[in-house]
Image (tube, rainbow, N blue to C red; front, side, top):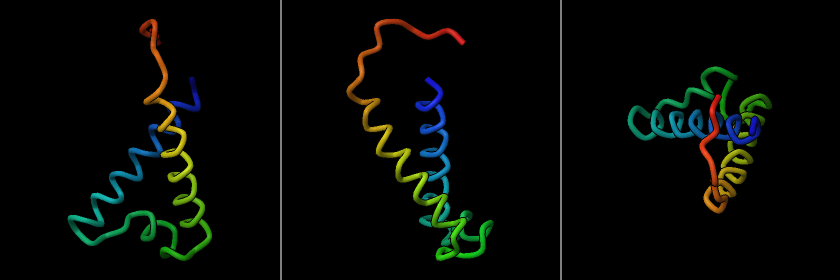
Amino acid sequence: MVLDRLSLVLVIIGALDWGSIGLFRFDFVAYLFGGQTSVPSRIIYTLVALAGLWCISLLFRERDHIEST
């Protein structure tokens, strides 16, 4: 499903951003979009959060077959 993959990509982006904050005290999203409180940054943070919530559903789904793409 496209939404599953998009959500996983956003969660990975969020994880990498948090990793860079934890390791280097550098926020890539804030750097790229003009600070943590800028509208584009807040949109990205919100999309990552929604993607994380969506990915919770992946834990509870059963996969009967392997998707070939």
